[in-house]
Image (tube, rainbow, N blue to C red; front, side, top):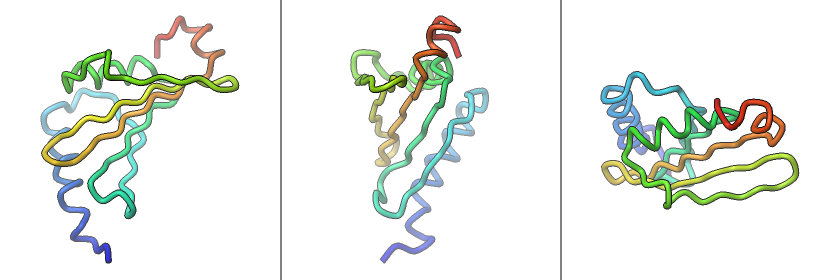
Length: 104
């Protein structure tokens, strides 16, 4: 059974990221009771914010996986920090990509 105590390692990683990188854009953060070793972070129509996180965490571009469907593209990468997996995903409407040249 999950308890509030099971959140502690993930909250500690999140707090550590805030302490080390307070300048990073805030993503949508999800801490789920199913994946107890994961923090999911989503960036909606802000590919530039996603790239800032990749750079700050030292994540190689070639490890990012991409997909497209309908009018949305998304990029996803998994990265481990202190035993917790960060799942970072960037969702971008294709119209937004065309309008902004991919900047966000």
